[in-house]
Image (cartoon, rainbow, N blue to C red; front, side, top):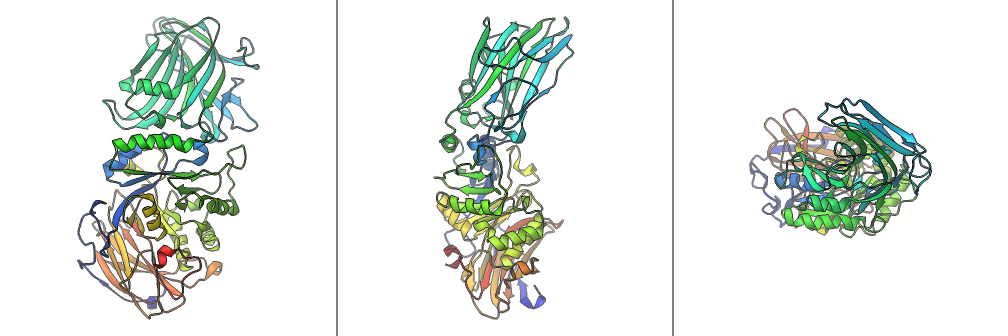
Length: 592
């Protein structure tokens, strides 16, 4: 925007309307600079747990939220992963690579451990399970006589796009086993890698693992500081058909854990030996039986939410899902209904039409819909700006401006949308799939909103109204608000034809050496003819007043940026608009 747009700007210092030098208050105590009953509610709006790919657990994320004083966690596991849609349900042991006409390709990768006298992994036609034709896998390992530690022949399974990884809740592994040579020093091991959890019940923080062992001791016990749970199985003559109830074994081994919140992150099979013994075993027909997935995946997660509400009462949880077979969308709703996948395969439709249709469908059960990491399928600033303007941000309520993609490009595209009065709320997210250390992530945005409570309807209304800002918790734990003409707050639309509008920006001070800036932009509805931002930046101190020229074009908008001493963005407010006429389809919350 040209210099003429901003008539004056003066720092307000420690003005009564500014947040001044106060530390960021807790959600329970904070009020806006406008004297309302709203409070600053901090939210992690995009996190993945044991129901998605990755190693995170709900437990780990809630521990991080509790430590950082975050008020709300919104669970956004992928819809098709919650449903295990398009997931592998069987492995035939016909070879290292198994293709499937509908399901994703399964691949075994061999990695031996120790120096065995003999080690082999062979796919054989005889013997094989009487319950399945084709081949079977024979594993062999013989340790040197002096080897006191285990030598192993190991195959680790993987699936393209992690189409086996989700919660192990209500999951049973069926496996046919022929023990040809097993004993105390010669074992079969089937290992299921599970989720990362914080230190608990005397156990260290770490990733948990279930191991089913055959040949040695029987029963259940834990090892490695409690992070490895072992189920010792008896050996029988001939083919054995095992049914391994993963959730039941987690509950038995670690009764203090919420077993539903345990991921099925990977599976490996191995024959291991020591002290000169020989292990020889044949495996066939591995089936992954996931009950309760067709109609109850969200109910499974709600079970975990209820259990964790007792352990983390200071963190409010709300359910959502990342709708992922279109351009990714987050749908939030405590009564959310997941869409039915359009095809048997977990295949993404990247078309704009499919995403816009999904937004419309989600309206029936979601309180709020977000457009996630929008540069993923719109690769440039101009392409994203064009998409936001031409589709009104797909019709979503929220767009992730702070996301895993290039921040400067996304901010520029958002400014183009604001220039065209696309009233969509900007948020920042972490999209964390690990849960280990929120502050150590390169992408670690949190979003706060001025809302009367942590109830989802209140939060959704505040977000639809643009009463929100996002921030970097490692650099700046602040608050922001805007007020135009003494009556319209951040996110709102002031209808005016005044030559100048007084805008009061209030913000917690920037980090030492940093800056707080009012960004003022023209609203000229240039549309697709000019997909560049048109803004002017006005430096501010702790808070300040600016007289903004809203008489030209169709009006103007203003938002706040907070940057650290190095110039990195650490806080970003939503705009308020000063317009001559209300935009078509403007949410009622913005016009109040």
